[in-house]
Length: 239
Image (cartoon, rainbow, N blue to C red; front, side, top):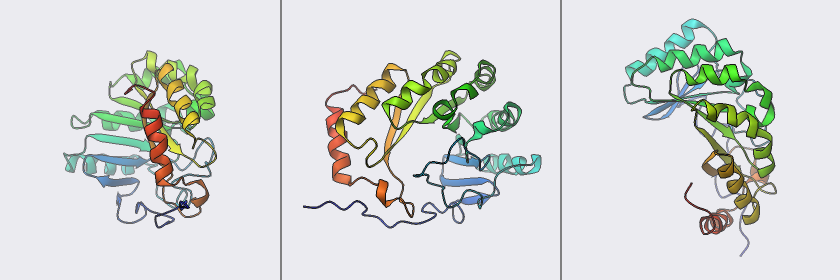
């Protein structure tokens, strides 16, 4: 049987970030317990498989103190929110002071338990992770770093940067996109997971390439993804 590469409808904005998920300028919410803050529309590099490739530059980002206050006030009005994702774009393209403006604003809310820095910096620009930045991010005790890592080679590239964060007590996790022709073999995925574990970077999740228009060439058939999952589960521990 020939497996279809794409079995879902593709869209330029599959998660409604320009419509239903937009709750106030620069804030997106799809789930009751978490919100995403659009801190910038800049990245260290623009991935061909980017979820927001069609909406970066169109989606409002938080720039002014008044806009940040509006986002903080929104979270206050929704006490179920406990997890804040600082994304965009890549929040670490901003200067330290601007990054900490976001972190401190949300860390000050007792209801917020987790602040996720969603970044590609440790892979694309490891020198951006300085000892000073790691120290600042660690101050609240609420920051987690979610790094986008797709291959074992990228783990090697980002190890030194990840070590600076880990040394300060900041958990570092990997969110990996399953990509056709890049990491869609059992051997490549197993190697990636092994390298992540050895570097003390938690393999947080591996997910199918998002159903974004124009990304069909990157999507892996679900049955193949399941085979890769089973292969890895039989050969590596639960971490």
